[in-house]
Image (cartoon, rainbow, N blue to C red; front, side):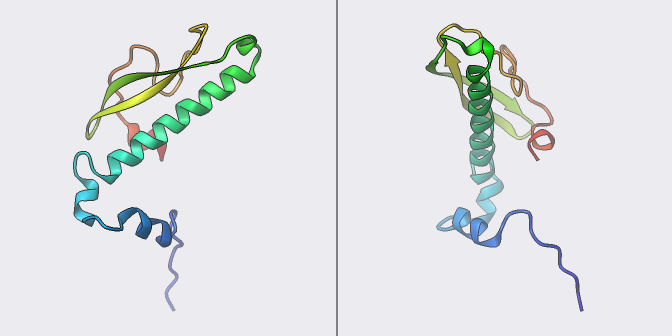
Length: 110
């Protein structure tokens, strides 16, 4: 009797992500893995903005669109949208202002 470890991501979800595409291309530059990195990064930055606006520093402040930023990861360049606020007091922690290189990205997200 073998003991199989449960996957961290359900197989059904992986099947949905890989549907209609080549599984080998998922790891290539601009593939599924890069799309997941972009989505996770933007979601974390939006959560940071929500936390910033909910705190005392966010009184009278609101969202003001997004700014585009290109960061360099271990696997290549990644264009992300960073949220802005009207008072320009938002200072992201995941990817700081003026930071362009993001080594160790995979270890920080996972």
